[in-house]
Image (cartoon, rainbow, N blue to C red; front, side, top):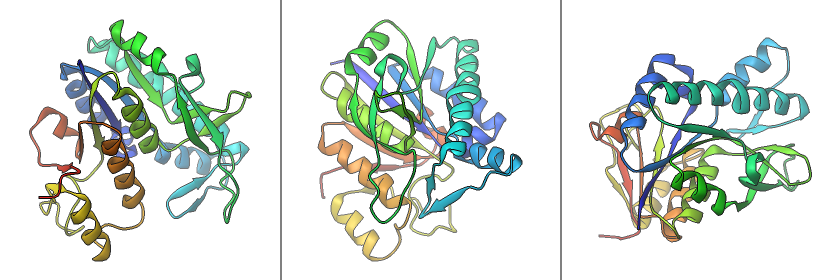
Length: 260
């Protein structure tokens, strides 16, 4: 079975042109087939403020009204995505930018209103596995932004972590998939103020203990839930850490289902 890496980069990398260039150079050097997933929330927030459009967040999740969706579409699907694709082409990586609507790549449903109305936010229901297989087998590197669609003409803002996990899960039937979450820290930390306190391995039992001790909380919980969900569906390994982990030169956190 061929190997495939699904790599998600966070907003802090996208914000910093030098860090992004360095990451993309390392990403290009990854020998196996690969998919890049990105968001760009910080840029979207900054653009909204410039345009005097209110940004509302609830527990770290963005409420996406029509005006914010316009900004997200322009940035995620336009400027950010195409800038990444152009830089990858310059590095010799034959990248192809995708939203979920392109080739019906990723289909979602609008999140149901329960306690909170998140607006135009999508929850993924289907991945066009045949499209990704065709692109990968054709030598292309898909670059997926955090926009999906409902197949009824509506674009939807969708969590990039979830997109990466869902792609990994669906493609693990056809490839040996590794999922990489790159963000500003060296990994999951025992002490948020100590960058060297990386927890190198997290099992379900360790995860429960870390949640009980309030070491892992708020926005990290859905991220790690996504990781364990991916492992349960056949993804071979999941790693969380700074962008340099993909070149093997920094510590990082590995998640595994096997309790020691």
